[in-house]
Image (cartoon, rainbow, N blue to C red; front, side, top):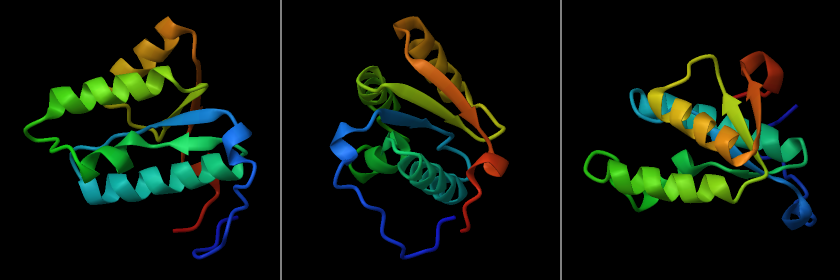
Length: 121
């Protein structure tokens, strides 16, 4: 179980499979960002190197005016991952597109919900 402030040993992280964290972003951005963090943490605890573009891209891409750019970058990042972890019970249109893309590329797609991750906020 994750405790805030707990340190995860990532010394071997570069040798781990990369898990693309597929979760909603738009809508309630603040809540969705917290969810993405929890799933990314869960992936790390499961021995994966998580890649959460919903946490990374807002640092330098404006979703409102540069959505197509964000989608292209996300697609490129997804293609470099070993797995796609679909997070939560709601699948947005963007997530649907990511799932289709992963399936077409032969990337393993796994589904998780809040009960699966057993993390604290």
